[in-house]
Amino acid sequence: MLRPAPPPQPTSARSPQADVNTLYNQGFEIADHTITHRRPQTWWNHATYDDYASEVAGQKHILNRFGGVPTTEIRGFRAPFLAIGGDKYYRAINDSVRVNGDVGYDSSEIQLPSASFQPMWMHTLDHNPVTGIPAEYTCKNTPPTSCPNISSAWAGLWEFPVVDFKTQAGGACAQPDQRGCEWFNMSPDEVAAEFMYNFKSHSTGNKSPFGVYMHATFFDANVHGNGTTLLDGFDLFLSQIMALENVYVVTVDQALQWMKQPTELKDLKTFEPFKCDVDGCGSDFKTKG
Image 1 (cartoon, rainbow, N blue to C red):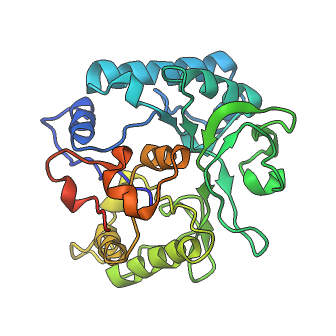
Image 2 (cartoon, rainbow, N blue to C red):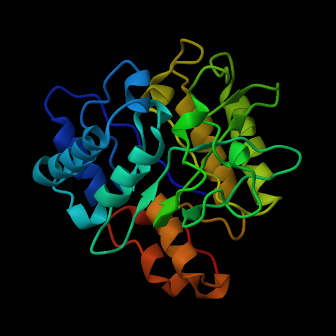
């Protein structure tokens, strides 16, 4: 399972840059999401190569200069609104997230599992479409022209699909806090059950990582007006999966490092990318032998 960053704590005394630095020093991965996140959403579908490149490179500079995050550790990117822009987008990401010759990852393509295809593993874009998988299955972003061109390949660039989140009532959304997934009348037990329902679609199938991608507003939402929040349900879900054998809560980059260096369960305690040396790490990260 991929670990989400916790929501920033509301405060008038701290800057966003200080919050980023705190999260980084707590062991959370910090990725790139552009400087402006400008509207309208459709602007990103039609942005130029230079637009993308300046937004991505500029945000990396800001995270480094004001958030204290080494640029070599900013390896990932997600498009605003998941609005990707075709080959010029992938070329800019490929150029911008390259670190010491090692290409990083994008996590913006929406993937919709079906009866025929299980949730996808992360994969490189060395070949497009992914061998044996129809292009319309691997990239469900709109408009379809925003997806990679069938003739293009971006060697070494990894894609971590945003697998559609489904509710037991039949709803679906790219991220749990988006329209299509109605949470706000659920108890914490019901929220945890929805997460577990989606987790099992991965863990009992092809074992692909279960990515948890949410905005901070998800954690701020008050369910019943009595102080109970959706975070209580998510915390319950985390406690449930942490009690399971062979489940690891990691960042996207840690999962990527495992993909590059597949390691048996018996050796994960000494797997360098999974080590966590920051204070309080033991409460967030589990290794079981």
